[in-house]
Length: 341
Image (cartoon, rainbow, N blue to C red; front, side, top):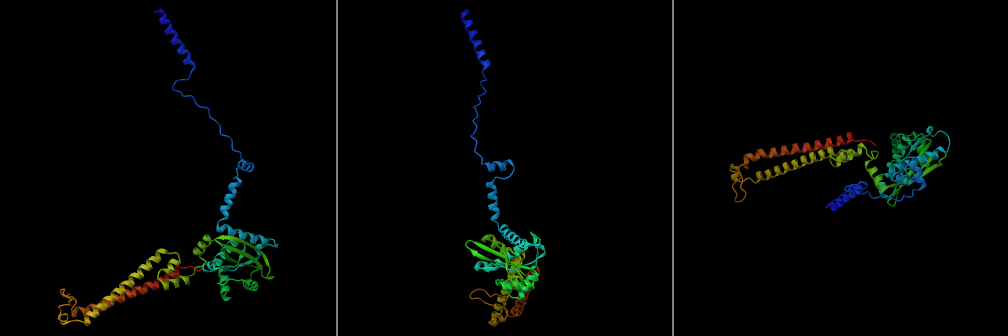
């Protein structure tokens, strides 16, 4: 008994001694963390990161995205033209520039008047970005109309110099927009009015989708007279041309309702006249008109027909007058709400 007791006490003491140096049973050992191998970093990227600047790869991607936009490409052409003009010496801001409509080369360019749209974008950039003295579009339009060159563009150097003199300009910006595969190629040059020599030139490929969208939304291609003409042809068309879809829908619906109601009244009047001319004895006696085996329609008697026919004519005239008035207001509204680009 004593030996057994001593053996149990020794076993308990041995268990407590081992437990004091071991972690609790509930705490699982933490596995060692293996560090991932370091990825080599290019020296340029590391230097850029240390300086807080974007890496060259990101910069090149951003530049590619930026260069893909239409506005950036047109601005680069404008910047190149101004840089070439500065090389001639003197203060470029003291020189008066006239930007003539660029020539359209190709069916798509002509139908969308891309030359006119692009030349206007170049003129805006010259004026706003470089603060140059550019002839106003209104004055330019007057001279172009006088010379019958508003739609054809100016190609000949003699015409260019002549236009420059008429506009009292020192230099003239001319160019063209031509189809080039899936894009359009913009070529622009600056011509000295006195010497008729090309001072500088620049070109760029313009994305077709963005350029066609710009043409569709361009104010420079819209005019009040065009809006009025369109509404005169089809009610509501001029308002749609002026970017007023709600007005366009209102005039379309109002005109259509007036026309349909007028035609319905005229058709009714015609039918009543036929009944009047074929009025039988029963009809004349006030018994109405028979349609086959059906009972007679009593209100279609001689007395009522003499009243209904002029009333139907009056209703037709009223709706016809309303349609004409709506059409006239539609044309006037298209002109007043329009803009002269």
